[in-house]
Image (cartoon, rainbow, N blue to C red):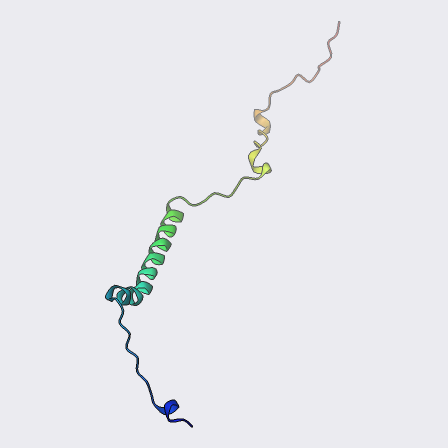
Length: 80
């Protein structure tokens, strides 16, 4: 084995402080945003839940009860 492969190396890289903070704090702020969006969606469903679309059978008016029907004369023939 070569001597260079066994020797550990250390690299030091300089980065801007705002990038370090952004990388460290971004997951927390993303979780805050997701939780706020979830709370807003829950509040929307609690305040005004969505209504399902009405089917054709539900849109028609029901038949009126028998006692509200117009009475027709039993004898409809006219005698002259």
